Image (cartoon, rainbow over all chains, first blue to last red; front, side, top):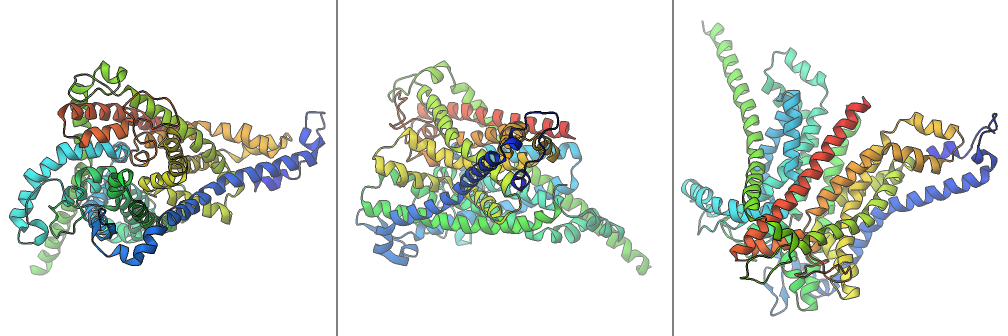
Length: 330
Length: 289
């Protein structure tokens, strides 16, 4: 847009000042055009990058795709020694650990978002927002270290006995207790998605027009009723977007999960049992994979993860931007 | 009686619900912050007791021998961050300028912005696998270059989007003043618009550095790791995060202590970058108003 304005340099400089562009309009136009092309090229790099990832992974996983076809995704035998690879235990572990994270994380995140957007006093709100966002800045390998030495022992000695004591009749909460396993992975993922879901939801709630609240207050509603019936429904789409954004993070999270999930390719009804995720399998097995088919199978899993994360993030961005866009800067 | 009593009972119930639910929201904040407090507490306590001068000056010792440090990993992390910045910062800034100055509301701009945001959500381990197939396989080497490229690719969308946002904040009158002097648009953009937004752009770069400095997954099979001093970029390169990971999952107490020490150093780096970036932006915004 600006380029259009400058394509016609004006004035010849009445004071005889250095208006070089005006003296050589052709030269300036050429340079501006070239600069425009350069900037465009650098902008296009991101699109090129996404295409390159897709193509590279697709090519590198050809061997596995040819060998196993679509059954790769729903057979569960993962046997590098005999060259048989089925990704189901990893797909299962990825999905279940992420859903567990959302199950734990959504209520807490919404509580945080509501508190920060609706209830907090200006000063504490800013500080608490920052503290919650700081949670997202902890390197995941440090969270994993904490997971191994603090969280997992606590899960084994406090959470799992409590769950087994009250809900032990459910297959999900029965069996031997290790601490390390699906439950610990779900909890650590919840810790990682809470800052994302809560900060995006907070922005969504802040974007709800004030009239919406005032109308409800005028009817004699309490603070909670205003939140429940006027604010939350208005921000529903954006909150769903925030949750999907959190899901995207959980699906691809690698280090912290690898360190607490136990890394065993099995499908078990019990959340106390070790499991495995796609990202964890890549982290653990990639540099040790010996045969071409093995490497190719791992890359096919990376491809699956890539495609899923693209779809999930695209959906989330679309939902969030549709809500946040019309409001603009507040 | 009941016709009068009923509404008061209803109001009381509604007030109780109000207090309970709003309190629950506050409890949620406490629950969300608790892990941060616990992580920080453990990292500081365990890390401080394990951190010593040797950590910064020595390379990892053989198992069983006392001493040893992570000097090589510390330097490796700094080199990898520098390499990553060489890739991510120029592309990010120029791409961000495109989004802000060329295709502000254009269709191409929309697609690029959208792609950058989506790319930001692509798991870092996938970036690692991509760079492995792109660089490690053809060169047949794990290398510092590969690790730097992986980190740079992760930086790119972050720098791009913050640059765009910061450049958009530059008042239109500034550009017009420059253009009115007959200065070509491209010179205006590079010498007037971008420098005016520089403080914000640098903040964005700091946040991106904080993010990639703590990344492990994209380095696992690009830079790999190295137990020895190596400044060669075409060889495997040590990093704090990968070393921390290897030590954390090993069964030795001495290595666990090293891991906590590494965590303290890494955490300090991350927090300093994040907090100063936050302080810088707040000052900027309050001055702007």
